[in-house]
Length: 275
Image (tube, rainbow, N blue to C red):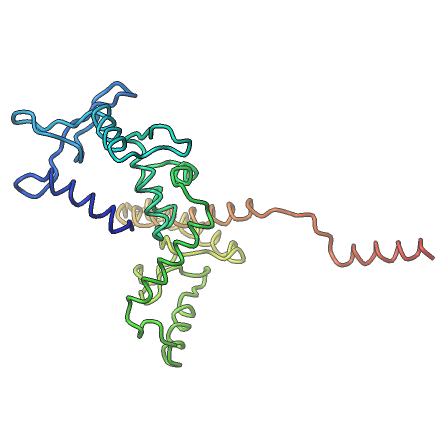
């Protein structure tokens, strides 16, 4: 997801610090902002100090960058000395990745940001450029994939596709399992987390819950403890489905849109006033 030039530089750095086993050694850096040592991690800018690996300090890396920029005559837009910090590497990677098609929310996870707005602030591009870059990436990927994957489906394939969704319909609602997969709960849908209950089936869910409660009481009276444990699992699942329907009902918002009869009555009154 980065340019070949940046990939070449990163590969050279990784090759330089690899140990005999081919892995980047773990070292313990010191966080100058938090004033504490962080857990061991594969820091790319590290060196050997005796038998131990130690990371180069941010001051050292910044001095190297400044010396390299000065030797090449690089300046900022105003013509002054280029002020480049090690933290700017993160901005470069974020910009390169998003401009080469990486979705911003994936880049957010890689950068470790809690808020995607922080990631978008890291990149030196506008949202339109990010969208254009992602579309170009998809086009490049599509060119590399076999053309048979983009052919029109046959009638038999289309009927099979539609049939999958028909078989997801159950008495209590619909199943959210992925295309081409079977029911993993052998149609014991009350326990299935993929069941999306239908609000119209709330009375039936309440009936199932009451029936489970009665069966649990009966099992306890006869000392069927194994049956009690199994029924409690179903009871918990039933209560979760009922709670889902209640949560969906609370999320429904009345926008105050008048009904047709109210609009018609209001229009008739206005017309009468105009006459």
